Amino acid sequence: MKIAKEVNAYCRFCNKHTKHTLKLYSKKPTSGLSVGTRRHNRAIRGYVGSVEPKIHPKKVGRKQKVMMQCSVCKKITEKVVGKRTKKKLEISR
Image 1 (spheres, rainbow, N blue to C red):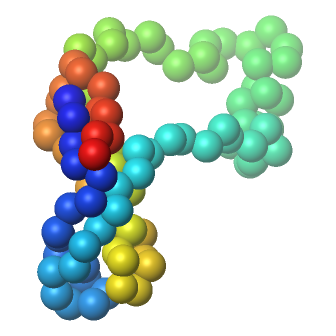
Image 2: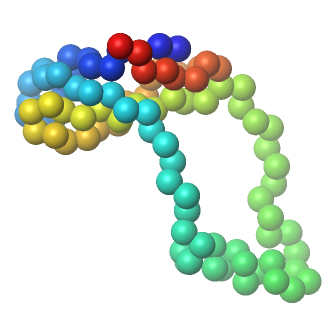
């Protein structure tokens, strides 16, 4: 799925339509020192019951997310493109 590199979109900070540059959203790796991770590791250390999450069937398509940066105020907002798409997003000229 191809998207233009620059889009004219509404900026809620400028309160008007401005040019936005698009960048693909990439999830950052999670920290191993967060409270939930430490609690989970402590629970699975000994002989305990089921603490692992139940395996759910994978969804066919993913929600594709794009980060839009305003050219005037340089603020970044995110936008979900489509509902659930099987194709990966690709930023073209």
